Image (cartoon, rainbow over all chains, first blue to last red; front, side):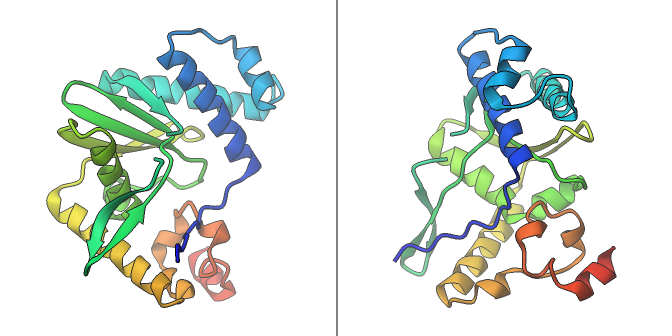
Length: 78
Length: 144
């Protein structure tokens, strides 16, 4: 019998942020540019909101991480 | 990462681990995994290295990208603009394996409640909101 242990509490905000990151990362991997407003709309985040600021902060932090490591994204949500 | 891959043997039975990486990146020498965190408290590198998840997110990429010589596990905290990264050594990986085996053993005995061991780590644990140990009023009083 397969037992599953899934303790992580997933918040709606966390889910939306992860969708932003996934869309952004997959566009990055595919060498496509996404307009920030489109990214927010697809992920259900209101522009000019605290969540939009956090989404922008998330992407900035990811870019800083990539710059620091000199690594290239190869996968997201895999 | 999907599909689940057996990466830990336990007395003749395999323990299948599965998970989903938020991000994976690589250079010629190393594979980097990153987990986006929305928690309020940022762990130190030593605290991150002590989490069983750090071992899991070291082992799974080795199975998915077998040519990776090194795996660096990272947590990203956008609200705090903090990046915490660790590269586990063999002793840390073995300690992580032992922690996973312990959890699996407890689950196999239907002792899931025992899996949660309350302590100072509850102050920064990302899953505390869903954890029966964290919900203990006494522990809340002790920690906060």
